[in-house]
Image (cartoon, rainbow, N blue to C red; front, top):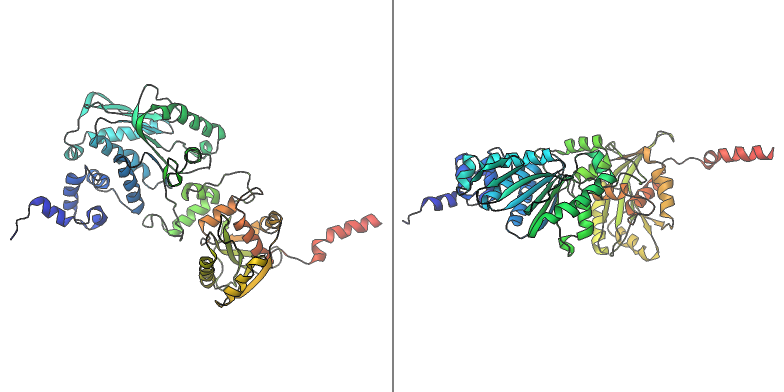
Length: 480
């Protein structure tokens, strides 16, 4: 029989590493963290804090941070909803792990003010003095004479500095620049003056502190398109498109409406948050797709699920290929008198694809929503759609394309906005496009599809004699 040493035994026990962490006994987890925490960020975090949880989004962030430490990523933006553990991992555990792996590093951690940044660096300093930390990094030692919470040094010459984003870091250099939450709250986030100060501070002060080849990590919840992350992406571009920034954007609801962290934030909890904060703030803080707070047509929508058995129709504004979106809105009318009629928007989708794939998407939605009829806005070239979709047993109606889409959006969607109730099944992409709409918007598809549906539902419609009664009375008065 072959002899197996202790490390080989441990390797067999922990074959799946952190991917199977929940199945490992506590004693094995401690042993694993002690032996492998110097190479694996999450193993280190679980060793330092046995209560550290590792849901899917934390693992995704850890993968990016490990890639940063290994030099594979130089510019990283992480955007994620508030209270999802981003700072504990990125500004505390990761920072301690960075220093343990290379005590010669010089790191600046910036936040919206000095005290917040110092809160993180104090925790890292204290952690680096723990016996647990020394078990993982036995060669690490602190400079005993320089251990202030906001500025401390290692005996190898490395240092960690805390700084407010609006303060100064003149005279200091950095191999790593970590910016965690550059704005404090809604008031700061929506202030053009403060956003401009942050941007100028970043360019003139923080960015100039970096050594050649240094790393920048920005960790934040999105607020507006003009926030620091938005400006960095606009000015320096996405890595995937030939620019500089690798972006990990983690919305609370994915494309299929599933929660990012279902163990902590179920769909009912998310919907409660959504209704409490309003849709535009929800899109920014929780979906990481900021809709600017001003100069748009539609206010925050009201969410309410439709009554059972509601007859539902759909309205499709199609596009095939190119940069245009197809948009499909479904809903039904709860009949009442003109003032009490309500339209329930049961679903909304926008997508880009070729015609053959769009047919499959349309058919899936048609069956899923149990549509009584699907209206399609079409021109002469698109009328073949009716024939193709009817072969799939769909009830199709055609509407001629309108030239003045904005007029129809105002006349139907805007005028009846207070009578509309949206289901949580409306996709985030559709809602973002809808709430971002104004007359100059490039993407009008969601708003136009909604307007088309409302027109077909007949909400707010009354007899012509009633709609123009005021004018008739005026004319009669003039004749007299």
